[in-house]
Length: 95
Length: 190
Image (cartoon, rainbow over all chains, first blue to last red; front, side):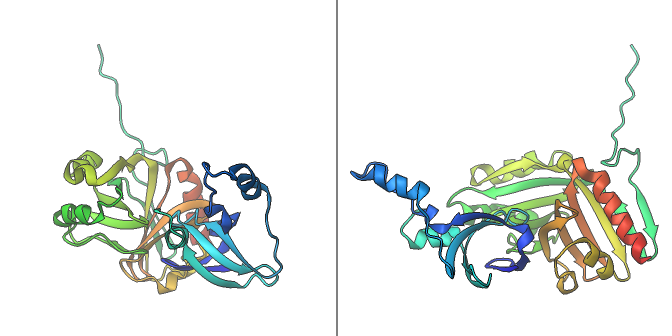
């Protein structure tokens, strides 16, 4: 599997470490009324789609950047790759 | 009281750098390279670039690249992060020297003793590099530099001259393993 790193170009998947669902970026607000339920869902509930899945990969043997990789779980086709920092900023996070 | 006889050993545990020629490939340990890491602090990127410009004679390199106009070479290692390298005899306290220069725009760490450095030269190094790592080394031009896996070790690979001259930085504690890998690969194509 080749991951097309947004800064470094195509790199072998063996250089990367897989973390899981990119929704980990959307950490719930601890001060919210529904924080308990939100964190339960955040920690334990995952979709397990057969098809396109957005996930976090870490370029450990490269530039140590976190990436958000959109991958088809049935074919391993990589549909889109972006820096997790860019993805988080798009979603209103400051870093 | 007698003076203790202390002499520095190389990363391979020798008194002098190991330099070997196998077939058409020369693998030489480079023990005279001072290395420091440089990480821009948040929002200080532009200030840092201005401060470091006089030393480099150029701006800090873009992803996947290295530059070295004068005696200092800068290699991109990550987002807002670089390795700076310079000849050790002229820069015995390199990290402190850089820290004094960049002040609070960046964090600097001493890396000199953390790495083993091999300079590899030959008429065509591509068959060797193909056996070592999964990078497209054939496409690497002078000034390309990137981190990659060699024999399960995170190494930094710098192209000095396309296909003919490369510098490898590997973890010093695994210097002998990396050296063994290089020599084995070189023998297999000699």
